[in-house]
Image 1 (tube, rainbow, N blue to C red):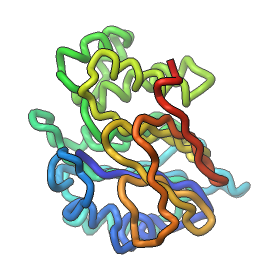
Image 2: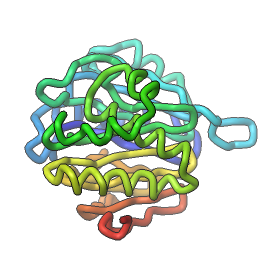
Image 3: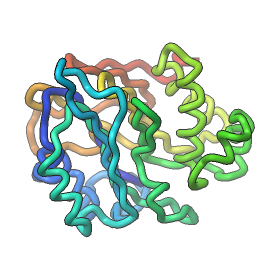
Length: 255
């Protein structure tokens, strides 16, 4: 459906993550290797969100973002930006739009609100009928403020609402994914969520893998190269990670 990754670590140029590796996200936009029945290419837009470093070496409190509704390799302005921008946290995605979903900048991950960046690789099965209950969760003003109505955008709106109420972002993400699967078991819900200090993720149908990357940690849909240190993350997991390492537990234990 899509390809995405998230990075935490020492300052790095965006181009070193998004464009330069042999099997970078840019390459995955036209030559992915593990779509698992969710399409063949990822050319319906892209987005990169990042956290700039602060004088105390901590990530900025709010994320910056660049999105466009075109293939990543068709945007020379992004290549220039990526070579000039240094970040300590990144979440980036290339999109393969679900049939019937709009191709628009507002539909491209990452979705953001203050310190959070979010991406969905997948879909809500049975959309839109299976997602009516999600819309009912939101206050009407928040529902009417969603800039584009896609399953990913609605899922993010509900997650953002829960993050504002919850002291535990892992429970907010894992609980929401588990609840959607109960109502719509045919859903594909591999997600990434970061605030620049931690990465949270779920694996439902579509894969994730991870490795230490120089002085940081990288979680991605597909390995960026043939380094043997890449490790696959099992199906059906809730993942929490920081610069020191990655942990996961079954989603079935969340609720």
